[in-house]
Amino acid sequence: MQLDVNMQSPLVNVQGMLEEAAGKAPDKFLLRELPFRELLNVRADLADANVARVLDNSFNLEFPVQPNTVAENDKHVIWWLGPDEWLAQSVKPVAMPALLNETPVSEMQALLAGSFARVLDVSSGYTLLHLSGNGAADVLNKGCPLDFDASVFGQGQCAQSHFFKADIAVRPVPNGWHVLVRRSFAEYTVKMLLDAAYDYYLLA
Image (tube, rainbow, N blue to C red; front, top):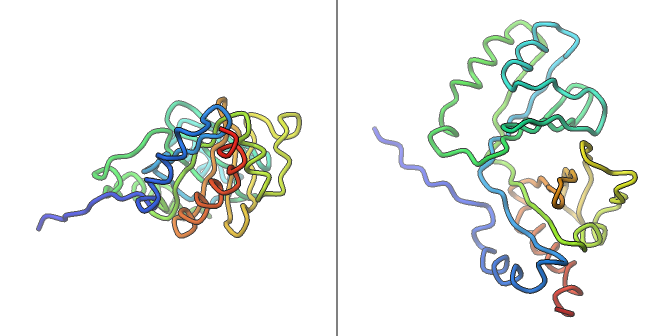
C-alpha cells in the first residue's frame, strides 16, 4: 500500500500576509519561515560515557552543557533546553521520505538502550522562523521580555521565553534571529510579529 502524504507548512493560511509584508520594509524587518526542519527532542544523561559517545557520533557534535547555548555544524544545531534536554535541529529542510524514515532515530535509540536517554522526532510539532532587519530585535521585544542586546545575548546562545502568549525558543544568527515555535501557535505568532512590526511598515 502506498502512503500518500503531503508536507504542509503550519503557515499555509498566512502565506499571503508574509509575502505582502516582505516587500514593505525588508531592511527594517523581514519575516520568513524556514519550514520542514528535522527536529529531534533528546533527553539524556551525558555523564554516561556511552550516551555521550552515541549522541556525539550521531550528530558529529559535542552536545552543549552550558545552559542556554548551542552547538552547530553544517548539518545540525543542538539547542540546550535543560540540564538533560536538547533539541537537535537540521540546518537544511528534510524531504518527506527522510521525515517518514524512522530508521536513524530507531538505530540511535537502540544504541542507547539501557541508558537514561530518549530521542523523539518532534519535527511535525514545530516550525522555525527567521527574523532579519535592523528592527528585528525591537519587534521581538514588543512581546518578549528578553534582553536582545548583543552584549548580553550573542552568537552561540539561545533562550526559551514567550512572545505574547506563545512559547518560543530564540537564538541570534549572523543575519538576524531564529525563533522556534510550536505548530499550534505558529500562525498566531506570525500575526503578532507582523502586528508588532506595524510601525516600520507604516513608515515604509
